[in-house]
Image (cartoon, rainbow, N blue to C red; front, side):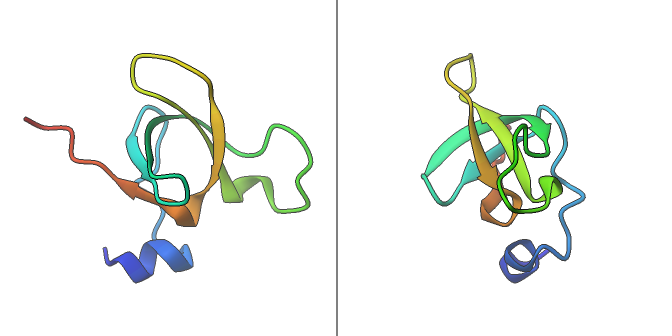
Amino acid sequence: MTRADRQTGTDLDWIKQDALVLDTATHQVGEVQQIGAAYPTGASPEEFAWLRPPGGGVEWSAPLAALEPVDDTP
C-alpha cells in the first residue's frame, strides 16, 4: 500500500479496532477505538475513526485518510 492509496482512501482495510496509528493531522499516535462518527459532522460517518492515546487518555476523531500504520514491534 502506498501513501497515496491511504490519502485517497482506496485501501483502508488495515484500519481496524485496536490498530496503532499515526494521525498525520495532529502528529499523535493513537489506538483505533471505533470507526465512524459519533455525532453529525456533515461527512459520511465511515470517513472518521475515534482514537485514544496508548495506555488511555482523551479520545479524538481523525479522518481515515490522515491515518498511517505504526509499526509497534520492537
